[in-house]
Image (tube, rainbow, N blue to C red):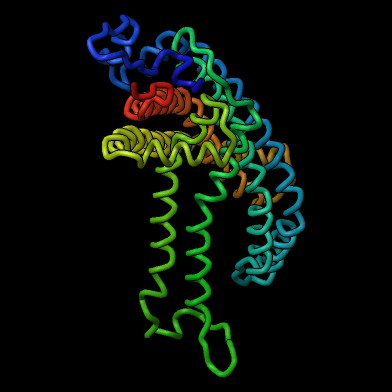
Length: 349
């Protein structure tokens, strides 16, 4: 029995001239819109979902703060050397710019911390996605439910596969724009080669971006499919791809939901980041007052403060309605697929 059949979404054929059961007629009754259904779920369970979002956001904030402290501790020798270099330049009445190697080292530390930060965000999304799927489930539904670690695996696998084309395209662009193929391979600056083929410069990242957007769109319903149907990572990706790209009406409905949600998320983040600009000076002052006397460390702390504030608030406000809407969309597309597929239980007379 499939998940849709367990919820009463399957259809039953009758013999010619027979009478259709009343429950089968209800399967074809007009359904309210996806957004309207999601709003109804939020009116019913919104307080519980937002309460979970607040708790999850708080835990992510604590984890992010701990990760930031670890990153600052790892980068502190670089901050110290930059500070000493600036002091010596001031004594010598000379200008000062940080050594590029030290800046690159701090970038490497940031890249090393990035996977752990992404893991925190995926943990938060998994917790909210599973709660939203349960809230959006139809009354009496008894289908399988995905476990937390299974849905988390979907987020991890999808993230790696989605971003791989874009990262690969950027690496290919960097390779071709800094390397010339002569008798020996020599690394040279980009500006020394004005006749570089524009296709090699702009083609790989644009192609990677196109593939990334296509994969992200086709797998938008994968976490909801895993949480709702108990599917593993690869099975959930295949299920989302078939539901999204299976029919023209399906990808149009998905596009009509995904674009506004994406625009709302980006717009709210930019608005909140602009509103959180005062936290930049507050964080720098707090760093200098309670931390070491290093203006460069305080500057970095001030840069991170509004970004972190905007990210946390955006997630807490947007994720509950977004995940609820995607859960409802997945259920609608799955029921539509079941209605249009032949019933294997019926054999011709």
